[in-house]
Image (cartoon, rainbow, N blue to C red; front, side, top):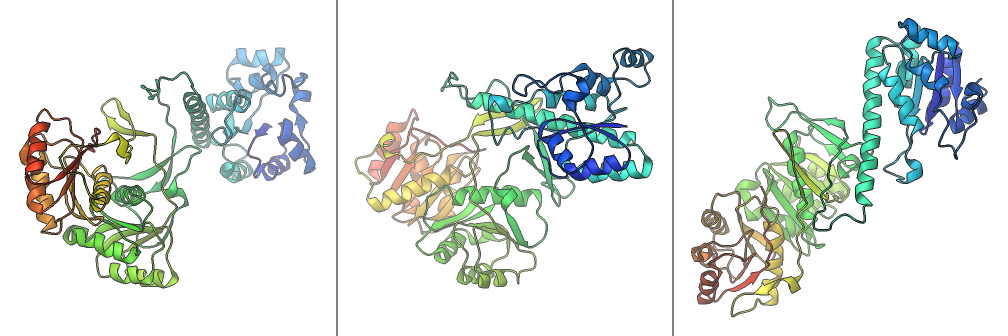
Length: 503
């Protein structure tokens, strides 16, 4: 029996080589892998000696040789193939162990592996006769089966072959992404790639999907990582699909509205409360007070270490998840008294470049929505300009509105969301819901609308709620009527020139 070893990730390779040698296998290897095996005192034949051809082109051509690929690809039950092996002095290769350069971590032309993927794919194609191992985690499985049975079962070879094809597919996807990212001639007005090649690994099984009868799991981009991968769940039940979805929404929101101490409370991917304050515990109290009815069973995101005072306040409210960058020892002990509360410690989130959603036969893809607070791109549409206090609430409400399902109206006073109308089919209903929830707390505050007001009566809810400033994209054919209504009510109104629908 004969094995070819050629790996970038050399963890466990010496132990595998020793195990194969002890079972009487002949070992062939190249480069650093051969050197590592030989240093351990394990007999190994260098690929150059095995093929009789020198390594050339700065290591670009090593295993690309008929004696290698003929030995891997031969159909052991095909007489013509067997005759070719004898005529060309080619010995069968029964096991290929190979993994590829970490291209995503170190992208470059020289890290585009050719021989490695070719060898791995050849072995995977011929898995009826050949085993292929790309994951060091499978070394023990292979050795145990070879020790007990003398060969790998067809089921094991097929499982290993699937992992091999997934390995090379992810590798090629990484190269395509890199070429797209470094394409200097790509039209800035059309930043979307001509094709998208996604490779994802299943890394976390969830309690269930959106509903208990659905199966759910979290997948991660191959060779990639996100804040979820470094997060630590200190307490509570396993996460469900909606726990992850809503926690992701809360974590992004709390880090997108500025650097001040901020707390967001999310329910069904929409904020029911968010507030910024100089004190993080006060920020939580204000966020929860935004809509305490909806906050029941919500997700809480905090952008500061959680102190005992916040933990004590939160313990009075049924909460599914709390996520924060850290917890004091006293706060952790207090929160762990809540049996079902999931406590997650995490790094700040990243914000993806593309948004993708499934549709029949493919995906809808768009560039991610970014919220600009550049006042130079905004205009004051009314006779009166906002005061500085109004500006602070306008900017805060605008950032929140961009993360609320459309149609939406967000009412803010002193950087506390006091009324949020989300996901309505018309803007008037969204405004009425927001004003009803505000219940008089929006007086002197700001109103944000994610899209323009199509009629002047869209301002009614803001006026009735006592708001003194409004921010909206503008662009309606009736903008003049809306501006006139704002002037009549003494409002300051800002046109941003940019809408933020979210579906």
